[in-house]
Length: 238
Image 1 (cartoon, rainbow, N blue to C red):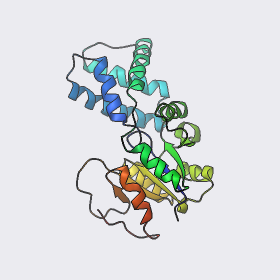
Image 2: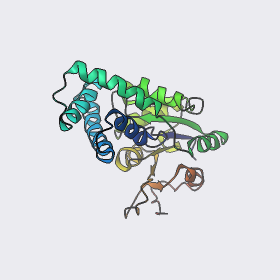
Image 3: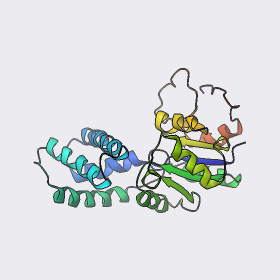
Image 4: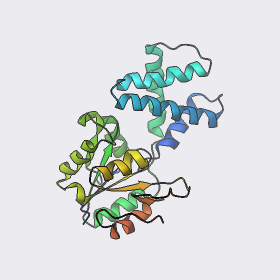
């Protein structure tokens, strides 16, 4: 029986992509917005991967993103002070745009009403991620937050999933984990012994041979948990 449900944060509960796109296009209004949002997303993912691998500090990965983008926009070679000052302003715009996906609160309330223990596992800085949850008004529903900045390891490593389960007082087999990335979230959780659930909002057909649960909206999660597959079983594509 599932006793606890843990969630990824950015892209699963928080509409991070929309918030980041709003903030970056506001920062450079003369650039093509579609190209700008896509390129910022690419640079962000590259820099954050290096941060999680221990190659860059939190501040350094932020600088790497804007220094690269400024160069591509023909704005010259920015030094650390200029990059840091710009990023401070960007964060204000980004934070202003933080919003949960529309169904998030009602789904969390349904799960909490069933007596399930709820929490978050996130690759990122604990302070910023807690602030996101608080600003979205979800702190009361998601009291338990585990972040890679505190554990020293990030998803998809098994340790961060197991640490989160231990913090909730449940074994991995009694926990489900929901995230928008197939490998990092759903498959990583499944490898750690949890029920991995892939939240795929893309609208694309599911890949063949999928061995984790797939939903296209969090609204489907309560029903999915009612029909959780037996250990070792495969999930049928919806």
